[in-house]
Image: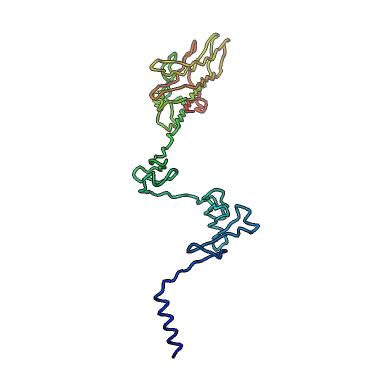
Amino acid sequence: MKNNRIFATLLILLFNLNLFSQIAINSNDPTDFESIQSASLSVYSKNPEYPILKISDFLNNNIFIINENGYVGLGKNVTPKVRLDLRGDSEGTIAVGNSNLDAVTAGAGAIRYNPLTSLIEYSNGLTWITMKKAPPKTNVLAVARPAGFTLIVPSDQPIKGWTMIRDITNSFNPSTGVFTAPDNGIYAVTARLLIKTINTPADASCELNIFYTDNGVAQGVKSVYPIIAPTSGIDIPVFNKTYLYLKAGDKVHVSFYSYLLNSPSISENDQLNYINIVKV
């Protein structure tokens, strides 16, 4: 009976006392609720990549690791090389959410996702700055096919009736053959035509010219194919390439000019007849 009274008294005391406990791993003097200290005197700890904490899945793959240098790795069998490394497998995507913190409180280098603009923002320590997407670079490729293709001779007018292959910025009108620069920059303009088998007299020539506007003034880049002696049944390749500095709204077109050639036409192979405009 006496023992029962003692036991009851101890239970009452336990329920009326505030108990504090701490967990320590590899430490005899914990200062926090849970304290883990690496084996700093161990020979292994001299390697900064030596793991001091690992969590593995049931297949014994490391899925969480902290190295001696404080680097954290998330993912299967990742060896962290930076402060936070997610490159252990193919699922290294990071999801960034929104934050109501002002940029000063968040500090320089903080990032957040703004759902109102659907864009990522970063803090420079003073304000949130939007990470702007780089605009797509102009890349136009159009080919010339005999059906619907207009080759006016002689003329400085645009070659018309191109067949569009790609135009990322919607800058080229294949019907009119006119390219309009979407923004300022340097553009590589390449044009090629293969004139079908024809008979040519001596001193004939043909040109594939690139015309563009410069401050509203028309300019041209010539490429001449001279025919010195009479020929019969030959294909004439004409080619022109140049680099142009264009301002937004400037126009570019390709024209064909010939001397002493009657009713030329182009090859059916559209891989040999094209215009390509790329912003560099």
